[in-house]
Amino acid sequence: MLAKMKLLFGAGIALTVWSPTVMAQVPTASDSPPENVEEVVGTLGNDAKIAIPAFATNADVPTQTSAGGTAALGFSVASVIYSDLRNNGLFKPTGPGSLPKPALGQVQAPDYGTWQGRGTDMLLQGYVRAEAGGNVTVGCYLYDVSLGQQLAKAGWTVAPGEWRRAAHKCADMAYSRLSGENPFFDSRIAYIAETGPKDRRMKRLAVMDSDGANHRYLTTGQTTALTPRYSPDYSKILYMSYFNGQPRIYIYDLGTNSQRLLLQSKNPLFAPRWSPDGKWVLYSMAIAGNTDIYKMPSAGGSAAKLTDSPGIDIGGSFSPDGSRIVFESDRSASQQVYVMNADGSGQKRISFFGGRSATPEWSPRGDQIAFTHIAGNFRIAVMDPGGGSLRYLTDAWQDEAPTWAPNGRVLQFFRTTRGSGKTGVWQVDITGKNERKLETPGDGSDPAWGPLRP
Amino acid sequence: MKTRSALILALAAGSLALSACSKKAPASLPPDPGGAVSTDTGGTGSQAPLPGSQADFVAQMMGQDTIYFDTDRYNIDGQDQQALAAQAVWLAKYPAKRITIEGHCDERGTREYNLALGERRANAAKNYLVSLGIDPSRIGTVSHGKEKPLALGSNEESWSKNRRAVTVTVD
Image (cartoon, rainbow over the protein chains, first blue to last red):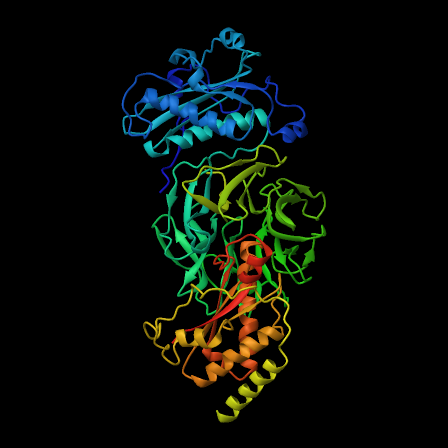
């Protein structure tokens, strides 16, 4: 159900209305990119003061977007971008509510002196325009105010229901350009929405944008749903639910809003996972109480058994190149993290931190594995794929089940409150800073971050 | 059939005889399991439950429809053996009855692992009943992991009550 987003520069229209210069998405070479990437990584951004005024428009006309007419839409687009940066602790943004709104003609010719006078380092602004067919066009421009120079620009024409995506794309453009990191805002999250008392929780499959917008429930809650995973192309979600009272794996088709069992089995099935290319599915199956990990083609076909220990082997997360799998096993008596080749060979324990290590997830960048470390409290931690360089990212009574943002710089997980059992989806960056709770309609658990949208 | 029942009764008596000490019984018996799937609630009012019904099973077991586990463990200890032996006696008396054993965990574990651990606990109970002569085709298992706690506190007393395998009759 994704309306295709059209790159203006691919189409070669629209932006040229206001720009006689040749369009290019890559900024000029004379810019000053961050020189010390490690430092940027360390703080996930910098202290740049970035102004995000309301996006201008050529005419305030009605749109079919939820934001209203183009003037209101221009304010809303800037607000979404502002929230993306502020909520993730990125830069020092100022939003449209406390800034003058540039005229359309100033979008590509900013008054640098005025912005310098306001103490602004960076200016992220743009325009919105209603297209004849109902689509809206959003142009996005990033300027270095002190250098008096344009750093980046892009534009998108989107269906009315997808206007927030254009705002996320604009935030991604600025974040990427200023931090040197890959973008992540234009992505979605599948999770389990929870309501009700501790002993009778309703657990429903739900999806939302990376900022919590466009929230939607996919299941009714009549049966418990757990552990969702978006397919790499966002077309499907794998999750666990109960079928005739037994744990089974469902595959939810977002195109048809229908679901079916992934496979027929008399045995309990848990912990479904996609391979990065979407061609394989991992699942865990218990036979006579012994759980092992299996791999099958996502299009159907025969499964291969990857583990064969008398202990519980469960879960699994592919390395980005699909060659290896990190998983969890209690074959050594307690839950620990193991790595194996994608065919099941070469199984090797990598967690030796004391306590228990669980729910490993390989970073999309490949450089880190996030997991739950249990030693008293449950904490989100990261290590390198060899089991070294342990770092804790959180410290609460019970944080578990990390999931990576598409750029591998931010994680989500869920936090359970002692006593009440209330749960919430939380987010933290790779440095352990900027921890915050995501706004969801009710409680939430098992977040699963999807990839960057095309 | 007769010899099997006799064996079960002998086993039950044996485990009763040597069961006195136990390490981990909850301070009080847990309430009736909420997840029971029986549709037969037995009689009404003060009448005795219908013999062979789920209500009868619960009444006869006097708490022994549930066995308890240590943290991360799934072994069947002496107290569990006593409870399962009592279940086996009842099951021998009603050979047409099938059961489901529901495996549960406390909240202090990760979600997926607990699903697998609950299944392992339910299977441990099943295997012991089979060793007592109960036909395995009469016994189903299901894991609810940590999703259906019975005791609601976040302390060892509650957790010890939630690490359990509950036997419920199906029909």
